Image 1 (tube, helix red, strand yellow):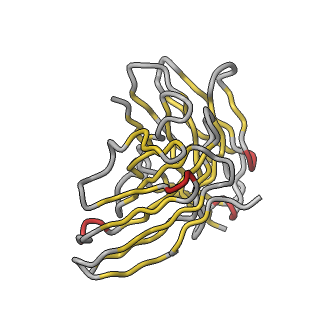
Image 2 (spheres, rainbow over the protein chains, first blue to last red):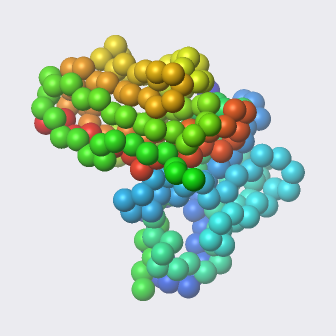
Length: 113
Length: 113
């Protein structure tokens, strides 16, 4: 079975500071990895995805993530956060296309002015 | 292009009553998924339609939940009778055939009192 762990349930960070949201996964087969974001009172939006190729993937709003197979990690980073980045962030995986998404528990990012 | 829409946005019902949630996927999307997030827990998969057929319903919690997708367009999720533990946010998502990207609706917040 596959699972996703996000160790930090809440991350407060000052505006313009860098941030890293941690994600680890467990799977006996190759998987595809994703980060979704949910802004207040909105639905889930895909931030970025890793399917294959370069282990550093770039997403929307200046976010990037690095896939590390040996450490089974897919950490999300942004060099300088903005107030508008305040949201809940979900790491997720899929075994194949059109399969169900398996989500981590989420990390609530609060950007402090 | 309209995104995934869900109705109602919020529903409050008493234990034992029936509630029907509706999801309208993006036009042309064959895949339709239902997920649920119970407060404090992960977003969990409920079921997956391909057009009007149930592809995977392994996440449906019990037989009080009935999902349909008539004509391969919109879908309904009926809970009958509702129990307190059914409270949570129900998300619908849709995707193109063999696509990795699922587009999520804003969710329906169900409160059972």
